[in-house]
Image 1 (cartoon, rainbow, N blue to C red):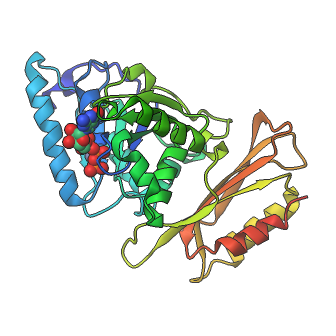
Image 2: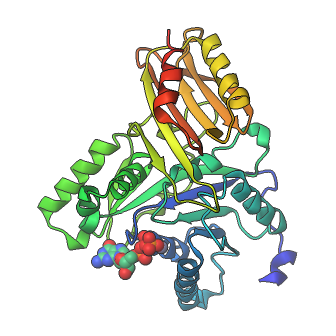
Length: 355
Ligand SMILES: Nc1nc2c(ncn2[C@@H]2O[C@H](COP(=O)(O)OP(=O)(O)OP(=O)(O)O)[C@@H](O)[C@H]2O)c(=O)[nH]1
Ligand SMILES: [Zn+2]
């Protein structure tokens, strides 16, 4: 499709390119959904990014090209580029590296696509990837996170959840917990009774997501694309949801193991104390024992009646005021990503900053 450089483009160079993230446990129907989206008439030029290990990725690539070829008769190319992140896992190749790679692609191929779909590997915590795309204006990114879709396998879902191996259960729950939209897929394989059970379970983990029942991931695209779920000055939904208070270990990457810690607190923070703690954590306590790479929070501070956001990348951090009043809902949510994060100790440190 190189000759279409000459075709005038309707894409405004200044418009940000939406990124929709697809997550879901192994085999839930993510690629099926991608295939479906790519073959539907969506008036979009979509780039697909697979965040999989090399082998799986090559296979999915084949699956997707097969689908486009089949449907290619009308001469319209429905997706224009392909970015494979080989040798690894976007989720643990610390954030901004991934964003930069995608931005570079975007710069080179600006006229070739105007939407990005990112399928994450089914065995990793999707939170770091979502974090990665929740970008500050100051970073002048061309990308904007549009939404997070979690596909769940209705047939195996209850089993995944009941799995005693802690990692599996935690992963499954987190994928459900942070979604904006949840597709309860493979409805064709379950009974009415099982359907009620799985939907009840999903709802108990995520009270705010839109839940749709699907077969072969078929869904009205207007329900999942262009959702603009993360607009400026409102706390991202996933931070206000009930993310289980827990520490998870992400898949090791190189010689480093990143882990993430999510914490919730009720009440109001004393801003000066909190500010002091952040400096302490990011500047004075960065050791091989504990290193915070990324931190985000939605906060209620006693000096303001609206939510504050906290953003930290490396040692740089900032507080951002929002327009959203915290009223009597005094929930505070933190997400920290780094190495050797000690949740207990962190919790104690933050606790001391409450009024
Ligand atoms: N019966 C039935 N099978 C489905 C449905 N959706 C997907 N499948 C099948 O489930 C299998 C896995 O689907 P994929 O789309 O590859 O799942 P995935 O989430 O991309 O899997 P990973 O990338 O390995 O995590 C495939 O064989 C699909 O054809 C459905 O609604 N009903
Ligand atoms: Zn897949």
